[in-house]
Amino acid sequence: MNFVNFNLKKIVILLIVLSLPLISINIEQKATQNAWFNRPFVFLAQSVQNLFFGLSRGVQITTSNYINIINIKSKNNELQNENNELKTRLNLFTENLNELERLRTLLDFQKNTKMELIPAQVIGRNLVTDHNTITINKGTDHGLKSGQAVLTVSGAVGYIFKPATKTSHVMLITDRYSVVDALIQKTRAHGLIEGKTKDTCVLQYVERTEEIKDGDLIVTGGLDNIFPKGFPLGVINNIERKTKSASLNIEVKPVVDANKVEEVFVVKSTGTENFLKEADQVYNAGKAAKNE
Amino acid sequence: MQARLLKMNNQRLKFYFKIVFFTFIFFIMCGFQTSFWPHIVSALPSPQIWLIMIIFISLQWPPLFTIFYIYFLSFCLTGFSSIPLKMLWSTLLVVFTLLQLIKNRIQLTGAFSFIILTLFGSTSFEIIYYYLSGVLENIPTSLMLLDRLLQVLINFVFCYPLYYILKSADTLILNENDWVRSSKDPYEAHHE
Image (cartoon, rainbow over all chains, first blue to last red; front, side):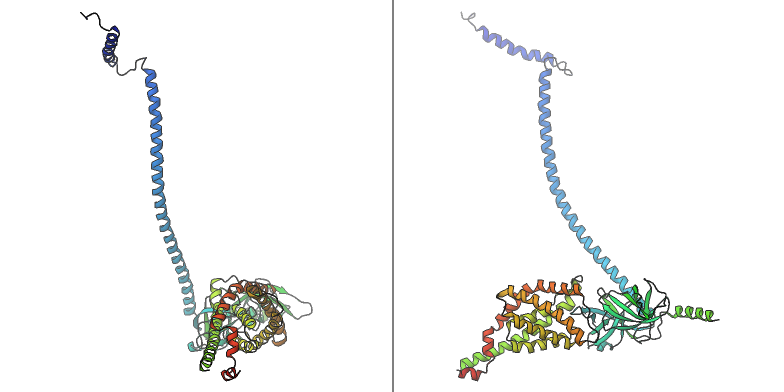
């Protein structure tokens, strides 16, 4: 009989194999707690799990960030384009608003004055620096004549000296050949404004005794029958009192920068316009009171 | 013989076309300086490209014809500026004479030579204008040294590209040698 000729080793192994599940059933009855011998394994498992979890999170975050960046970038580009377009429109509106304001001022000036004015645009400057002239887009066809005053709402610019049919040359008050009758607004002293350089004029034939200082306003005198009386010409920049001269040498800075002027008015007729009417009345009244 | 006469007439037509073309270019240059540049670049003075063109034709074209052509161009120029004709004619005559005197003394060719001569021409224009203004005008112009220097500098900057444009137009329409031949009477040319 081979009953006793069995392999003991194999039986033990078989028993262990079969008993282990039975033991494990007994262990799992206390599911809320890990058995003392289980803890190291659990700890290891946790560590590994945490590691992989962290890794997967990192990959997830990186991937989602990358995808977000692409989305943000494209969204950003869209917003930037929209912003640029809005900025351009805003600039356009601002420019239109400024132009509207400017044209409104011009229109108000034209409406509120007794002078007959012809609006014109500056289309050209002179070829050489020795002459200070501008070209406007109105000529004899529009009723312009030589000697007519050219001004802006801020002040006098010059006068027409070479009209053609469609355009005209305007001699600026800063040109060396330009001579304009002028008046010091404060003291009423008359003089002559002559052009000197492209941004300065000289006021001549003002008596040494006149009490004037830098910053005083010079206006048109009205005696030359070109400009209406009392229109701003310039501001005193420098006063030179020469000992051997009976008059002052006064440097004047024009109120209008002719290099930046775009629109002008040509005075077809001055009417009875006098910008110093009220000031004249006050001055005369004061003078009469003094004489009494 | 007939073919030769025909060729001569062709050259004569090219010559007339060249004059008309350069006059047209001159007007364009003046318009650019007075009406385009000041509205775009108001901070700097505009380049005197009409003067660069006058310097170019003074150096490249036959002298006798050129001086009369310069007088004609100066006449056209008065439409763009208030500069008196006497000032233009006298100043440009002196500049032209000086250019004729020194052009053969510079041992350089091409664009570099033109740059040097343009610099000389622009500078002499400003100096001569200043002195002639004191002689010929009732109210002489002021020195304005910085403005004049800046003007010469800007002319200098623009002369280099302009040289190639003018040179191309010059040789394309009518070569100088053909011009000299075409100025002769076709009958005389045939009998030579």
